[in-house]
Structure formats: structure tokens, C-alpha cells
Image (cartoon, rainbow, N blue to C red; front, side, top):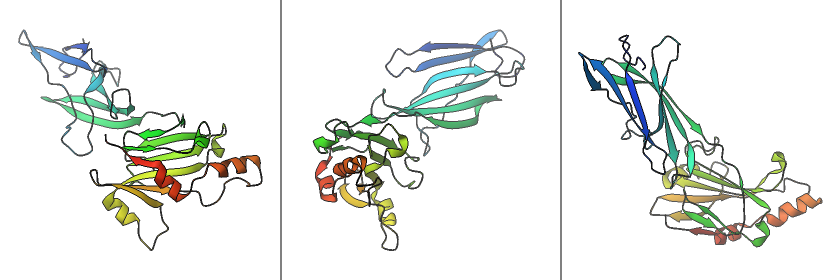
Length: 253
């Protein structure tokens, strides 16, 4: 039993798995008043407010922050892409009972650390709805690093997603980009694409259905000495803008 309501009487918390593929749980908290068990409400973020996402708690557990027998609730919501296994991160929140409802104390997002994948034959961006069909020379020689959401690129917060195709090297400092593809809302791209500023990249496609503009950035110079084996290999993997446009194919979600 834990004291959530701070009345020096313990409440009873019951937790059970839903049994679905999402790994979600259901909880009930009961308090005893005048000899009768009453169910307390449960905390939850307002999904109707902008910027709040999630599909329910995968975990909701009691925490005694100050080791004084007074408990708060810590919730974990899993944020996914198009399917449950595509986990993008976790929304952590803490809640304190205040009179007749749960009060949000704090909330923060913990992104998962996605591993770079090796390019083999093709790449599909499920978030940004496109395929990229590069030359066979890319197979095994390119790493794919895709980031989505408001922190996809710290230097370009307008980007909805950023996919970097990187030279495959065991040394992180040698994983230079061969091509970078950005996805922007059309209005954001219009603001960025001004004649008075250096170009972010070159527009390669638009998707009117989602109001998205796709932009490719190519290396201006070889990051390696072109006379070395590494420099020659890197240069052989670089594509022209026309080749990038031909390799880029929009797909339906």
C-alpha cells in the first residue's frame, strides 16, 4: 500500500498488462473512505493539446521521492512511428495528487538511440514516405542515419526529418555524408529558400498530399584527399543532383 493522497492512509494500486503488442498496462487505484473503497482517477496528458502525443502508459509506478512514505506516480509513454516496434523514444512524467486530481509535476522526452543501418539495395523512409534507390556501388559502403521530429537537426529545426547517407567507416569522424535528404513543410522551405542566404540544399521533389518539400544536400568537396584510396572510394559514391532526383521515389503510406 502507498499513500498517494497524503492522508496517512495507504491506497491500493492494481496493475495488469493489456496483453496487446504495444506492451501497455492498465491501472486502478483505490482509497478507503468511510469504510468503502473508492476508485481514484488516473493521470494523463491531454492528447488534444498541440505537442502532446502518446498512446497510454506502458508503465505507471509509485515513487517515494523523499523516502518519507508519501508517493507520487511516474508514468512512461512510448512514442512510435508507423508500427509498435518502431520506437522513437519515451515520454516520462511525474504526477502528484492534489485535492481531487493528479497534478503534473514534470515531463521530459527520452529519445531512443537509433543504430545506423547499412544500405543494401534500397532505403524506405516510412516517416517521410519515399524510397531511395541508389547505385549498386552503395551496397555495404553507405550507412543510413535517419532522424525525425523537432530535434532532427539542431541547426535546421524546421526540418521534419533528416536522412544522412554516410560513408561507411569504422571511425565516426570519417563517416562523412555523401547525400543528405531533408523533408520540410512547404511554408518552412519557402522561408528558408531565400536568395540572400546560402542554399540549404536543392529541391528534388514535392508531395502535395502532405504539403512536404524534399531537399537534397550534396558535398561541395571531397572531405578526404582525392589522391588516397579513401578519397577515391568516397568520390565514387557521390551522386550528381540529377542522379539523386532519379533515385528518389515518393511512396504512399
